[in-house]
Image (cartoon, rainbow, N blue to C red; front, side, top):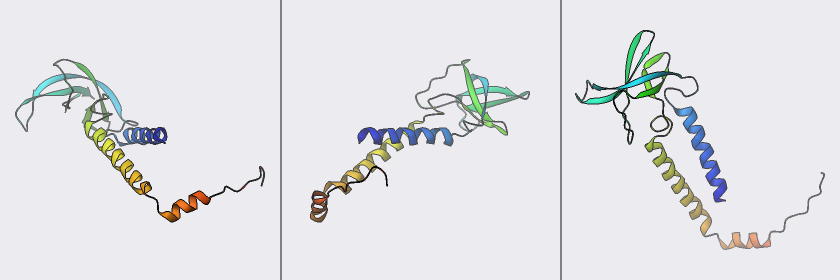
Length: 144
């Protein structure tokens, strides 16, 4: 039972990852970029930005993410929607494909749903136990 639940969890989580990315994993285009530490206009701090060129225009997208260290000048790949290249993202497993919030949320959801299933099936009624003990599977012919 645990193996089936785990396989179902992995399939659902994988499909969620493939079809929920923004920019879109299936239709997005990739481009080479370089990390540069530039001053952020909102916080006035230097942050890593992935700088890439598309149609002779420079784009710089925020490349920060939890537990991801990007030194100055590191070559990376970005994924973007050709219609909105300013909404690009660093194309990597950690931060684009898999995020810490989604992992944490999906594990919590898995544990909660498992606990609900155990609670529902833990204490069957006397009628249910009697019905289960009296159950006799009917013989079926090979061909109907």
